[in-house]
Amino acid sequence: MLIQQDMELGEKLAILADAAKYDVACTSSGVERKGKPGQLGSTVAAGLCHSFAADGRCISLLKILYTNQCVYDCRYCINRRSNDVPRAAFTADEICRLTMEFYRRNYIEGLFLSSGILHSPDYTMDLLYQTLWKLRFECGFNGYIHMKAIPGADPELIRRAGFLADRMSVNLELPTAEGLRTLAPSKDRKRILTPMRQIQRGIEAQRQELVPYRQGRRFVPAGQSTQMIVGATPENDYQMLTVAEALYRNYGLKRVFYSAFVRVNDDSLLPALPGGPPLLREHRLYQADWLLRFYGFGAGELLSERQPNFNIFLDPKCDWALRHLELFPVEVQTADYNTLLRVPGVGVRSAKRIVAARRSGRLDFPDLKRMGVVLKRAVYFLTCGGRMMYPVRMDRDFITAQLLGEEKRRVWDIGRQDSFRQMSMFDDGMLSPVPSGEDRRSAVWGEL
Image (cartoon, rainbow, N blue to C red; front, side, top):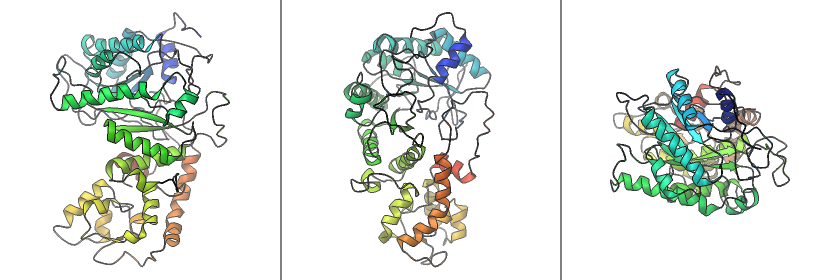
């Protein structure tokens, strides 16, 4: 379907914001750039005012596509070439106008810009680059920008764009090359990994000061990320987590995002998903991803060929602890930081507080609670001064039964969410159900 001409800006915004809703790679800025005289915006501290949908998606940025016209025919994509959907395209001036006006009205704190492939990767990447250049140098916008790099585009265009964006991402889409061949035959793994490697090397060269700043700007200062679709292809959780671990290790990614597959096209090669999008599976992958990045776990510790999928009733950390009861209970007064991190209910911040506090005195369970330890999980795996909070039988079935009381309710809540609506900037944020205080803390700090 051809791009509709003579559309009003509001109509374009409705189409191209909705078309971007399945891309979840929005995140905090990760950079500390202050405002400058004559320019608008900054990224210092909490430079982005975050909002989260009920399924955990960050929707704090103006998230749009340059165009939803696309030459590719990926079977899982609503914007694929063969779909009969309304097509629209912004101009660079229109995106600049939207970004500046929404920012001045305090609706947004930054821009997330992606695009379908219009004519060719080079043509599309040049449009995105020209848009960012206008926004930075003609409009004086100094706020956060997350931009998608287009696989197959000229490396020079990607390099230039890297000095204008804060974060760049190249979507892996599907975890295996076979999955891409089946559902996205126009794409291949090498074309996706090539710009990812280029961005990694550019960031590293900038860090080592091997390349100069360009017009006073660093190259992709907030790092790069990617996204994988969960449930569109037969890969198990172990395969997906192993791929994520390799991306962190070999490409220096800041984040791997997981997007539960939503069947928006009627296609025989797509799974039926009678129970709806696999939101719980996505949730478990995010929990495990946090353990990879901040808790020192490896993918092979959490899952294996014999146990390739996560426990639907227990979070990955609790499940791991129950499979390794020989390592517990852990003594709070003597355990090192890395050992404390592996205790369910102890997070990064609370582990640091424990290590600091025990230098000046003995700790007891009320002290741990004040430090942020989630005692309803930790009591089965911790001792203070050689004693547990109350007598506990170190038996896997017994402890599992105690933990499942709360977890079964959470699993049901997550599984029934209907949250694939793109949140409007004018929503009042009244989500249902309202996340508990503990859920909010876990989402922000990863206190697992």
